[in-house]
Image (cartoon, rainbow, N blue to C red; front, side):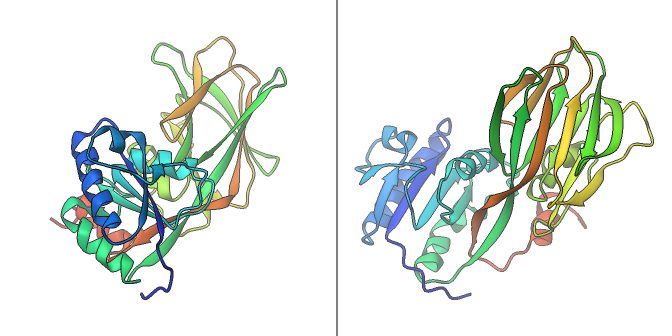
Length: 287
């Protein structure tokens, strides 16, 4: 598991609403600086005090490593924002945490392994999501977990048309649809009854949310596919949500197009713990 990459410039990001994460980040910044690394901290870390960063963290900068302290949500936002594919070490200070590699107690041993070159990089697929408005405008996003089309609490069941590579798959009345990467299969997809996928599989899963047609089930397609979902229902409140953090309202005739991104997320692993080891531990299988 030895690597020759030399770490010189590190980005440091903490969950801004977590005093614990911000405090831990200031300690990490000091630890890294004392070992000769240039450390750029985000505003939440600087605001916690006691830190004199080389510069503020900039997602457009080319870092050798980005350390994220918080939970999966914090890591998701950083992963989407990075313009260069810097390795990300996720430190779980939240609850479940499927993306974050190490816990608080493992943080400094993990950093020691990193600086010694004792780590691996695990690449995760991203999806490019394009909203094409019926009236002609559009917006684009990149997601690591999922793109979700869902109705509001007061809206009635909506009808969506699914197409894969231009071919009609289904016209479904439901509460919505989850389009998930393998990484996101343990998020909303899992709660909605979708399958758990090994994150290295080259696939995308479409999971209907409470479909009115009981014989419609989650569908797994190659991630080389182009997925198109069109809202057919008028005058209902329907939203497109990206990784649970960004989004836009949808109108009748709007089309959501999803395809595999050329970009990847590179997650740092400092242990031999595998994906299914994490599942067994976090979901309490076999206890």
